[in-house]
Length: 511
Image (cartoon, rainbow, N blue to C red; front, side, top):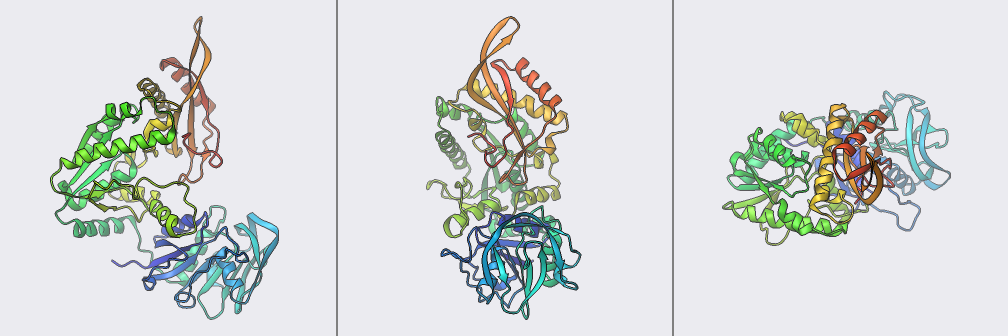
């Protein structure tokens, strides 16, 4: 089935992915492309959204898209920088704002009988984030809405299906933002709402059958959401021709290797467990630099995985659980304006000797969509609700050099923390949680003896995508019980602290 697609042109805004997620929530398929790499098949897109940008239309580094195939020919919504771009280069005026317009504002004027503002009234809260402002509307511009400080908060262009706003409808703080996007996409652009988890499963399984035919596919399972959902989709398409490998790197949570294998058994997958923990831990012995740890783990994983893949005769494909944010980052790094903080291990970086074709069934989905697709296939909620867990595992939660004894200590601490979150019904309200073993000893007293033992930090955060995160205000009683249990039961630990840093400026993991 050919979906009505929406094209989002990325000018480098931190919110571009959020626009896409909001559009997808309306059951409408959309794709993000860099502003200077408009797809050749732009005919297949039914509407276009221009994102915001950290750049200024008045600066020397102005971002100039070629909109000749879009403007006036397709319904277009220009957000923030996009709105200023339309004004500045179409007979209007953009100037530096006297007051930096950031944060909450309320609509003080809304033009009556406009489809764009159906169901949105004066007083509605919107979110501003710009230092320039539109002083004069472009030629044929019609004012649609204002705030107290921003007169030209929204406008349309007469004779075109072109709309522009100087606020961000995609962020949570714009209370009617979803309604505004629905008004534009559904009621003005007439885009059909046919992008659902069920339709995705049906189409993807059909496409995989055509793509893979009778070929054998190998997939590295991690126990996480993405690789598990990818495995079930592939299993539906090719059954026993899917060979799953679950590698124990010795850095998983306590008893996780055995419990995850058991879970996979119940899903009917063809899974082989490979306990290579000794091989990983030997390679990491005494390594303390975080980047060297990552590289050592990556190198050994590829060696182990490649050894196992070679045992499968005539394997043609390597399946990966790559999801859409990974793909966007990779495109942006080479051609778009968004700055990429780090390269992602799922995209590229494979050694030359793994001469396999790549299949990525989830590469069109965001994380929340992956979970919905898994649920629509009847997957176990305990797998779909699992917290994210770093690829290098506990290695990057042991600060400083790594030993088997430190891994044992951290596994015990982590097990107590996670099990208590579950027994207190807190696990599902936390996005990610874990314990960190610190490279410091501190003095303690146990009985009549002085001790000089390890300190551990507990970390629990709330987030939607990991790009930003806030620490969770766990109950004092919970922290008190968990701290006591850790110190009493885990030999080698005499102090527990709780990390109350948000991201930014801190990161979720410590290494």
